[in-house]
Structures are given as structure tokens and as C-alpha cells.
Image (tube, rainbow, N blue to C red; front, side, top):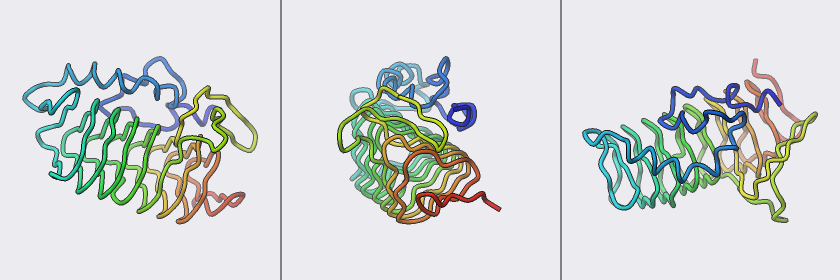
Length: 221
């Protein structure tokens, strides 16, 4: 279970939300805290760099938000982020510095670290995406099990109860997810791993590995 810990997944200096991870071991433990954390952090942001747009919505003055994008609160859009045409941010979302939220992408209860790209037709819910993680066009996180039972995190050797009904995916720094892939509830992908296009991913993908299909995960050469 060591490989699932925050310390193994994320460079915390690459997010404005670093403080939310203090005192916890596993990244999914912060999902229930995101909403309140945004309100607290937003009220402390410097007014010379961030402006408040509506109730509990803070947008960096250097961010580029297209007129057709929707941002619901609470939300923080950090410096130099780009919120493109028809993006739909439902709320409880932190979008990191230089991140891209693209055409028709939907976010809900998420933390996107700096330089994350979810640029085309993505759904990201109840998830955390590490520094420079990228989701290809049409790839999504599925955040509720079909039988509505609580989500577990599994590898070939270990299983951990999370106590959460809604839990999408935890993507480590530098993860690449191929187009039209589905990350099933409780998916954890280690740093710099890659997922082939059109994959259906369950469980844990180790760091520096390539997910080619269920049971076909190889180390990056």
C-alpha cells in the first residue's frame, strides 16, 4: 500500500492545494474536504492576483476563461490556466497553474495540479490529477460503481476499503491516459505511467509502466 501514498504519487509543490494533503496518507482521503478547503483558501488569496467572480469562485487575473465556459462554485482557477469553449466546471474544483480544461470537459470535486491537461471531451469527477497529467480526448473517470457499493482500491496483492461511494481516479504526476479510455472507480495510476487508448482500467497501474490491457501491464523500457 506504500505505492498508493501521497508521497509516492505527487509533487505537492506543484499545487496551490498542498495544505489539504497535510495529515493524511492516501490521496482519496481529501475528496470530502475539497469543497470547504476551496472556500477557506479562496478567501485568503491575494486580491492583486485573483478576482472573485460570483459566490466562492476565484479566478487568477492571468487565467484565460472563454466566454462560453461555465464555472460553478466553489472553485479556484489558478494563474495562467485556460478554461476553453463550453467547459463545464460544476463546482468543488481546483484548476492548477497553466492547466487546460478544454472543449466540453466537465469537472466535479477535483484537484488538478499545475500543468494538467484535460483538453477534449473529458469527464473528471471525484479525482485528483498530478502535475502534468494528461487525459486524451474522450477519456473519462467513472466515479460510482454500477451496484452503488463503496469503492475499494485494489492491486494484484492488496485491497483497501475507502469508505467512499464516489471515487473516480488518482493519477500521479506525468500520467498519460490514451483517448477514449475509461478509468473505473478506485483506479490509481502511479507516476509517469501510460494507458493505451480505448482501455478500461481497474485497480492499480504501477509507476513507470504501460497499461496495454487487463493483465497486460509492462515496465517502461
